[in-house]
Length: 326
Length: 119
Image (cartoon, rainbow over all chains, first blue to last red; front, top):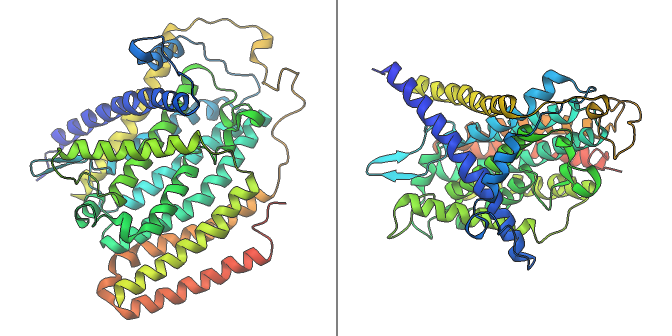
């Protein structure tokens, strides 16, 4: 029998814990890491004045943002305008439900091992687009509208290759549960990054596009669209968009770790440490790419998805199916 | 227990919304408020906004979302097959090959018709 009151209490505690974790580790620390790595790659210092080596910079920024007035321009559709940042932040949080962090004795550290984990993850990843489109449209600003539309067309285009990469992994592992997929991979050479290398590449490219990062960041292209869909957002609402975006990026890195790099598995060190090392390695890759490559044009971006990644994903699924069947 | 799983999903949605709204509540309590007409105008690179943004825009965006809907449905059909095709053997593999080939032809058709060209 299920002890419902206890389960509800546990769910509330875990949700609050996860939200705090994301706000601190993904958003605050993530932004700091981004700026530090960006500084390092461009031979600058990055933030360094607040706290030792600038460690408290984003904390100071958050406190500042908490004191900023919310400006709601007259022309906006207020209800949608106010809801959009919440949708993006919550979608970023929800993807973390299915991500296994490691093991503790016999227990797996995962909020909930859903039996349709991969589909759930893909669904939550595409929830973000609703928030972005709502924010872009309701702002009644030409930059925001263009940013929102570009983002929508980009995210739906790259959702397909992402989904195909997930299907290839599910075929290999024979399950959609994220814990099951980690358990199906053994050791370093047994991790799916080798057997499913094309799917791994497709996943990484599509994930970069899905979280709107360079070289696929034209939805918020600063030099042409000001800030894209969040041009009109001030203070904490802007911060919620950022939180959602960074939570999503870390979720993509965690998912790449889970599906392709063997999740929490590794020698000597505790499972949780291995998971974090691998996740931060993928996060570092995302940031490295961001500070290295120039931005794509919209037609080039859509061509890459529809004419390269999508056919490649379909063919790779057939190859995987052939190899496993025969 | 499937029901417990979805309880967690529901609670996460509620708590996430509540905590995000809480941060907005803190702003409401802390932030100063002042209002004058120019402050609440729409940003348009410093000039007075020209008309509304809710106007016509490029139909290409719709075309891409239409093609997307077709392929998204296809990917959903692939998931159940991906789980059980080991047990079903060659028959399932060939059936899915036919399905994928038909969809591939659809992609080629959209491509040749120019639905995937931006300009």
